[in-house]
Image (cartoon, rainbow, N blue to C red; front, side, top):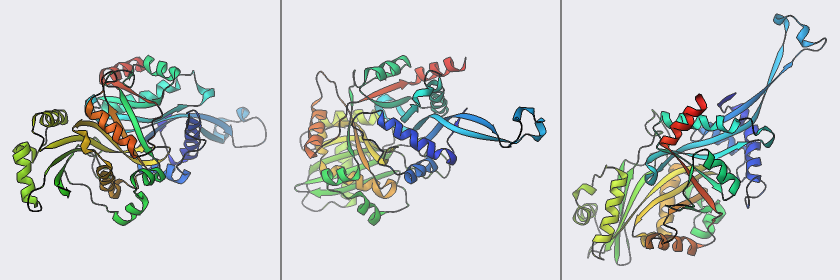
Length: 397
C-alpha cells in the first residue's frame, strides 16, 4: 500500500532517511536534523512524503488458533511498517521550463528491492507532477555508475554529464555559513523574524563606494503559492544592476527614473515570461556600455530532509561578477525572516563543460574563493514532461 505519510510514520521514515544517508559517500553516519525537526518537516507540508507500507495482521487474542474463531469474534492488530519512501517538493527552473518538482529523497530498503516498490513510489510523483502542470522532475544523485544506469532506464537525462552541465555547489550547515559568509543565521533569524510575506514586485537600492546598486525582485508564482491560505513563499526572479553613483544619494523616485532610463519603462512592472526576461538581461549585459552592469538569477526556498530549510540560487545570467559575498549575505538575510533559519545555501550552476562561459567561470571562482564550498559530484537528472506522461502510462497499464 502506498499513501501520504502520517504522524505515525515519522519514526520509521527518520530511520530510513538515516539508512539512505549511509548509502552515500562523505555524508557521515547520522543526519544533522533531529527527529523532532524531521517530524516538523512532515507536519509542515512543504515537502510531500509518500511511503510504501507493509501491513502485518496479527491476532490480539490469546488461546486457540485465530483462524478457527468465528469471523465476528476475531480481534486483530494491524502493524504497519515502512519499506520505502519518496520525498519531493515544488521547484522552479527557467532552463527546464519553469515550474517543476524536485525529488529530495527516494529510498527502498535493501531487502525489499526487486518488487517494483521504487517504480510505484515514483508513480506518485508523476501523478502529482501532471496534476500541477509541472514541466519536469529533477533529482540529484551522487556520481555512481549504477545509479546513473537506473535513472537512465527510467527516462531521466543526466544534465551534469551533458549540456548544460549542471553543477551543484553548496554551503552546508550553519557553522559553514558562519565560517564562509560571516553570518550567524540563528541570531539573524531571531532578530528579524516576521510573518509578513514578500511583496509581488519589490525594488531596493543601496550604495557601495562609487556605485549605486538596484535589486529588483519579481515573485514567481508556484503551485503552492496559488493554493488558498498557503503559508509557503514562492521563488523570486532577481535582477541586479550596478551603475556609477550620482552626486546625491538616490531617492526612490530617482531610482525608478534610472531604471526606466537604463532598462526601459517595461522593467518597472515587468511580469513576463522569465525566460524572455533572462534573455533580455543577457542581451542588455552584452549590448550596453560599461557604465551599466546587470545580472539576473532565480532564488527559491527549498529543503534538505537531512538538514532543514535552505536557499537555492540558479539560472544565472548576465555579468556574474556582480555576485559577491556581500550580495549573497544580503540575499540570505532577505529570506531568513520568512524561511529561516536557513541552514544551507545551494548554487545550481550551468555552463558548457568544453568551453565554459566567462560569466559562470567568474561565479564559480567567486564561490570557491569564499571558502570550502561542498562539491561532492552530485549529478542532476531531469525527467521531462513528455517522459513523465509516458512513465505514468506504462505503470497504469
